[in-house]
Amino acid sequence: MRGIDPYTPELSTYECHDCGHRVTVSGHRGECPECTGEVRNIAVPRE
Image (cartoon, rainbow, N blue to C red; front, side):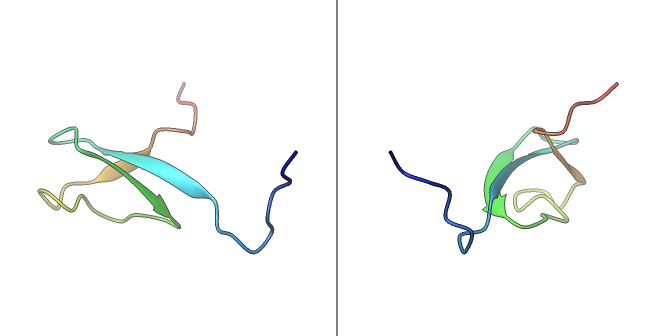
């Protein structure tokens, strides 16, 4: 069984509000690489 490596950054998936493009990256993504629209972390629950 493999443990979590504390030296490997966590990956997060972000989705663009404008075009719907999704990207998985480590760290925060500020804008969509396709259309430069605003992105949101889809792993974070919304109310």
